Image 1 (cartoon, rainbow, N blue to C red):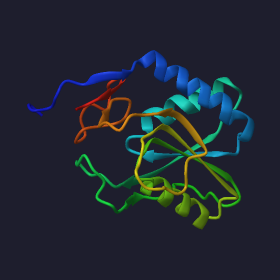
Image 2 (cartoon, rainbow, N blue to C red; image 1 turned 180 degrees about the horizontal axis):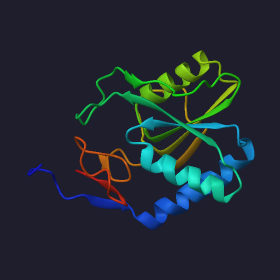
Image 3 (cartoon, rainbow, N blue to C red; image 1 turned 135 degrees about the horizontal axis):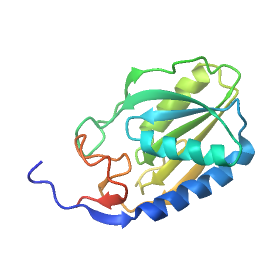
Length: 176
C-alpha cells in the first residue's frame, strides 16, 4: 500500500473509549444477561469487544455471537449487495439480539443483519453502531444506538480498514 495517504486522526483513542462507555451506559438498562450481542464481522469486532467489556463492568454479561457479512470487499464504496459468509452460531429464537457494527453508511449490512435475526425468531432486535456517516438518501432501519456522527470521509482504524489494512489503529482516522 505504497500509495496510501497518511491517516489523519479524527477521534483519538481516549475519545473512542469515552464513547464506548457512554453507549454501554445507554444500552445496559435495555438488555440483560440473556441478550445476544451479535457483531458484524469483520470491522465491528474491535467495537464489540470493547462494548461487551464495558457492559460487563456495568453488570451486564451479554451472550456473544457474530454474523459475517460483507458489502465492500476491498473497495472504498459498497458494491450495493451483501454477501453472507457466516450466520449466527447459536439459535436466537425468543431472545433479544443486539446487533453491533462499526459504521453505518448505506445501511445494507445492518438491514440484512436485522432481517436474519428476525428470520431466526429473535423476540426483539436492537442495533448499535459506533459511527454513523451522513448519507444522501433515507436509510432503514436507522440504528437504535449511535456513538458518533462521523464526517463523510473514508475512515480507518478501530476496526475500519482500507483493503484489510489499518484496522488496528487505536484512533479513528480519515484517509483522504
